[in-house]
Amino acid sequence: MPTRSGRACECRVSEQIAHISCVRLRRTQRIVTVGASHLVLIGLMGVGKSTVGRRVAAELGWPHVDSDQVIEARTGRPVREIWLADGEPTFRALEAEALRDALRRAEPTVIAAAGGVVLSADNRRALHDADAVVVWLTADPARLVERTRADAHRPLLDDDPEATLREMAITRDSLYREVADVVVEVGERTVEEIAADAVAALSSVDR
Ligand code: S3P
Image 1 (cartoon, helix red, strand yellow):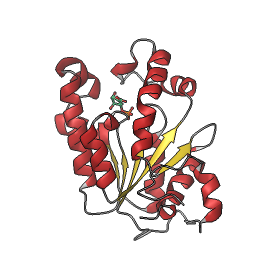
Image 2 (spheres, protein in one colour; image 1 turned 45 degrees about the vertical axis):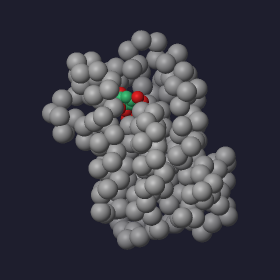
Image 3 (tube, protein in one colour; image 1 turned 30 degrees about the horizontal axis):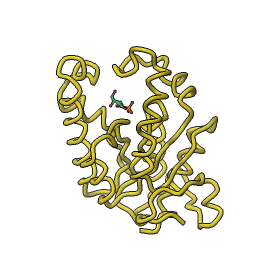
């Protein structure tokens, strides 16, 4: 069983849950408490944090907060515009603020964190210290290229998305691993299957 001190375990959640009592949920069922305040999804662009997050939130009956959406709502501007007009440092400051505010929410919340949150040591510390289970969604960069092809809202993927995502996997994987309680491989699995692993992570982490 993964622990907060041991951080991410190397195996897939689907393998871990053989050893724990699995939380089974009907769609209408509300979970009041499963041991942690929040469930945070982290991972590279295109891995499905927002889609899986919405699904998990619907299953748990929890609110869902998406970092990029919060930033866009607060500024009234698209992420692409902030990034290109104001620069990366301004965007990262907004990203950090969105994460901090989400982690401070009083009610249990599913948080789809932006892909870049782990770049900041302060953000990593906030994730580590938070009353939250952090789930790292991971996939092969080639798969992420396919999944992000149709989206034009990510300025970082404007030039050579495959090389960018491969480079990001190299530089960021150790950072995701540092803060993750559980690693979920996306592979070819459905949103429902991945969401089920994320829900199971809530009760599998010994906090
Ligand atoms: C970024 C990820 C994006 C968005 C921005 C930068 C990153 O969010 O915040 O384009 O540095 O990984 P998603 O991970 O939700 O796509």
